[in-house]
Length: 141
Image 1 (spheres, one colour):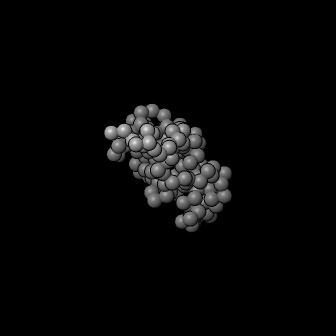
Image 2 (cartoon, helix red, strand yellow):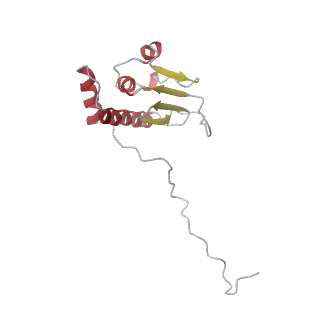
Image 3 (spheres, one colour):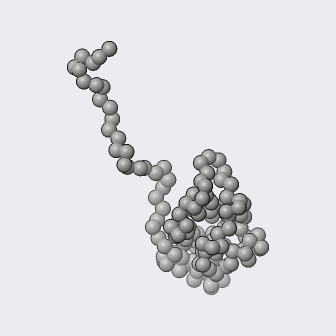
């Protein structure tokens, strides 16, 4: 039945050009951040970096990797600090991705700053890498 006023039922307006992410905004830091420098200084001194410093350094380096290698075919996890999807190629949409790299915070800082080689970390069992695209050696210094 038509509306008595002759106009259609009002609908909510949506701007199709605005995309909203369900993910939290990650800091825009880069590998020259003070957190990375502080974490490396602590590691050079032979002590573990503070948890907040290590967290910020890991997130800055993960963000840097995602910028250098945009894509969604590999998920790099550094629990409990963060995870990113990167590397061009086919992306996964549901469930556990087929290409996963997982490591701890200190190992990730050393890998991402070039102080530890990918092959050495893999041989020592410090990295869990699964999938045919899970080799990050060409994206790390």
